[in-house]
Length: 114
Image (tube, rainbow, N blue to C red; front, side):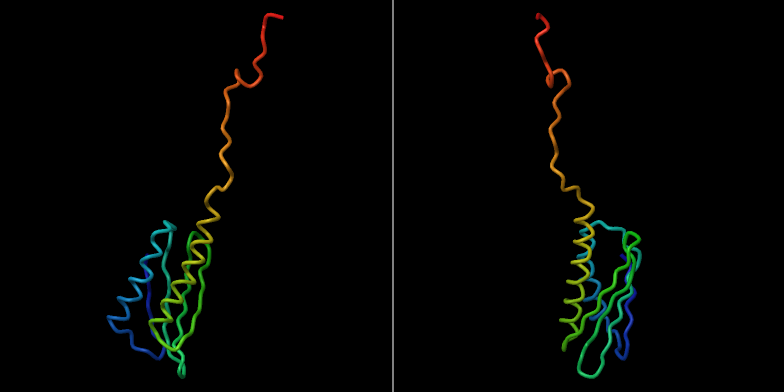
């Protein structure tokens, strides 16, 4: 997964970049084809805001969060994107029960002697 991390009114420190990369790294477990995700972190007044935009399997990923702490904002953002990925992955899985097939000769077997 390729992440592009930018800051709006905020300097992106190496510690913050590493935290974002490790938190978004857990999304690889779904096995979806993720192109690149644009993560924008910013500060407005007393709120720390984060948003992510990107494409996964040809579908648009978009999420926004805002809290009073940057690390809590990143955690909430990853949780929202995780919910979207889980929803898409759930749709890909076939939930119909497997019907056991019986061979043709056992289905309508009648006695031939009559």
